[in-house]
Amino acid sequence: MHMFPRVLGAVVSIATLCACVPASWAGGATEQLREAHTVKTAQGAEEWRLTWSEPPTPVCAADDVEMASTCPCSGFAYGEQGHLSIIRLRDGKEIDRLDLTPLFAGADLMEGGLAVLQRQAPRPDDLDRFYADDPKLAAAIARRPETAIMKFADYDRDGRAEEFLLQVGTLPCDKHQFVAIGLPKGADRLRALTAEGTEEPLVLPLAAWEALRRSTAPKTVETWACGDHGSEQREEMVVFARDGAISVSERSTPCAGTP
Image 1 (cartoon, rainbow, N blue to C red):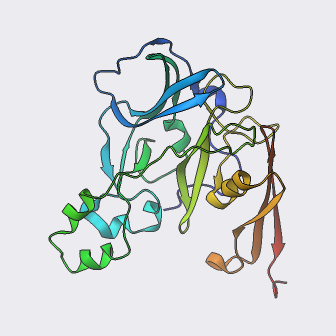
Image 2: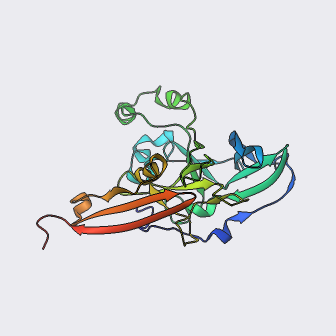
Image 3: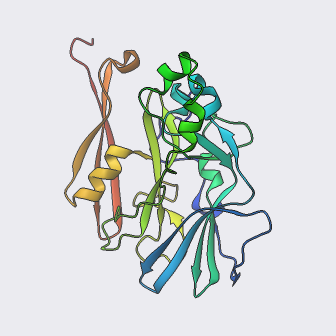
């Protein structure tokens, strides 16, 4: 299963993703909090809540470690799926809400176009224990700490660490694809970061986002190596961010010995 097309920008326009619903926030009757953090924004301290609109269901689950170890599950095992939002609260009142589920529209891991988050991370010996019918494996996985999702950093280099990465797909194999969610420079509503001059959420491999986080100088990141899945081309991205603007360009060169 191929979970994401090999494209730079992805899936839906920002206009379909943004919705602000000011209200005193008590959470819906079926909403389930996954993670919450206090974020210091230009407007003051806020609480950001990663929230399922209803209790999520397992996907790439620990009861089938063999399936969870396959390429489509890479980065998502052992996970859960459902409708996912990020909510901003200030002084206990909801001021902003972004539906994250459409960002997963290009994935075919599950039916129904649901969002997926890893809950517990796999370990290298899980598959061996599964094949050995280890009766303690499921309980051991359940005791592992929950994977943290919202790890804030300054990916658009605007001087404010108000974005976190969200995995929305994987290319074969283990090439995890991420968007960055937060408050870009000048924005007063949550959104996915975009490349300069575009409106589509920017989907990049982790190495590209890390290059943006670490430096304001242009950096070259290999995205597809010669021979990877029979590729006769070496593919790279040149990424650059400064003062809230992100530039990304792609280039491809023939591998040595390719006609």
